[in-house]
Amino acid sequence: MVGDFFWYRQNCLRRETGTFGCRTGPLFGKGVVDMDATVTVMVLSTGLLLLGFILGWLISSKVSHSKVYRSEATAEKIIEDAESEAAEMKHTAELEARDKIHQERLEFEQEMEAKAESIVGGESKLSTLERQLNRRVDLLNDKEKSVSTREESVVTIQTEVETHSRELAELIVRQNSRLEEIAGLTKEEAKGVLMANLEEEAREEAAWKVKEIKEEATNRANEEAREIIASAIQRLASDHTIESTVTVVKLPTDEMKGRIIGREGRNIRAFEMSTGVDVIVDDTPEAVVLSGFDPVRRAVAKMAMEQLVFDGRIHPGRIEEIVQKSKDSMQEVIRQSGEEEAFEVGVPGLHERLVEALGRLRFRTSYGQNVLEHSKEVAFIAGMMATQLGLDTQMAKRAGLLHDIGKGLTHEVDGTFGENGADLSRKYGEDPRVVNAIESHHGDADPISAIAVLVDAADTVSRSRPGAQREVIENYVRRLERLESTARTIDGVHEVYAIQAGQEVRVVANSDMMSDEDTERLALQIADRLGGGLSSPGPVKVTVIRETRAVEYAR
Image 1 (cartoon, rainbow, N blue to C red):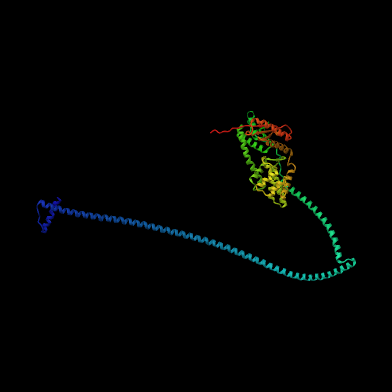
Image 2 (tube, rainbow, N blue to C red):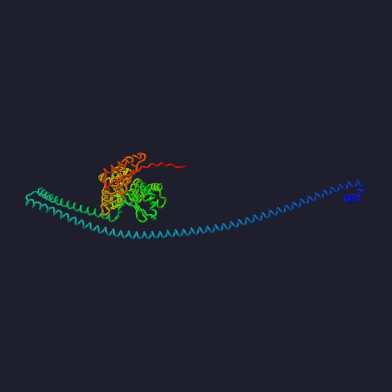
């Protein structure tokens, strides 16, 4: 119907305008109307598209303008914030700069005030010095005037003296002439007689004077020597503990005695065999006694016994293990003892070998006197006497401490105490004066310095003062040492222990050098040697023990 309408409208318009008339006919008229409608639709579609495009462009433009506006607003806000922050930072910086300038100004003003005060003080000192100089100038002027006056008086006196000297010379000439006339001797002859008489008198007076001076010097030297030695002894005043041959080990309970003895005495036998000391188990409550003349062995035995009691496991295998560990620990004890004594005396820089030998002196005695304590006392006495005599105190102490160092060596070293001590000290770089003090003290050399004489005197003082030594114990110990050393010289002997107060010598034979049958021969040989070379208060029992041990480890 729409097509018919357009067709009719178009034909009518054309008729009204006179261009065409109204046509009729369905086929021809229908085609013209469809064509016009299509054009119209296309025009309308184009217009609508154009309108939509314009509307889209307007909307897009508006959105873009809105985004730009928001971006510009954001940028402006950022700029404003930045400017505000920059202004605040600038203000803060200005405040800090002002504070710093103010602080520097205050420091500068304080520094200027201090300098001004120092300048004022300097000016005051200068004015004081100026006043002192002025006073000194005045004094010098006064002294110069007095010196001038004295020079004038000295010139006058000198003139008078010269006049009197000439008069005296003339008088002497006249008197000499008069004497020559009276005595009948010339001047030269009288002078000779007078000189002879004066010389003889001078000789006699000089001889008496020399004798008086010598006696006075001797008496004074003896008095000073007594004072020096007495002062050194009084300042030291140390006590000596007389060494005994027994050591007591405390036990927690008396039940421990049975464990120490062991079944059929096997534990106590193993302990005595390993240590070389006697174990005395008596009625003394909670204690056992270790008896032996060698302090080192007793110390090892005490250390081992205390460890066994503390551990509680006591059997022959454990005993041998603990005794061996105690022997190893004894070396550390010896070293520490040497270091402590050297530090106490104040003798630094000793070689380790000398320190070890010094520590061994802790376990040696000389007539009941502990050798290490004796050496320390000799060092102190020698150092005090050296100080009073103006000698090298440090060298005197060093020589005194090492004077018996040879006694700290084992039986494996041959020679006397003096020779061994001097050789050991010389080997490890000691001063020749120290070596000479050791040698001269034992009579192996003559003293070459005052230090050696002081050490010898200090040793005599330490040994001879009352209560320092006791000969009975020393003789007993020496006898036991001779028993062991005599038995040790025989081939096949591994270890020797003198026990039971010297009534028994227990020998451990070297199992690699002899068989079981050879032990009887060895026992007889040792008994003959001991009986022929030593004086003993009674028979000495010789016990030779040989055992073979095979050790393997299961893996």
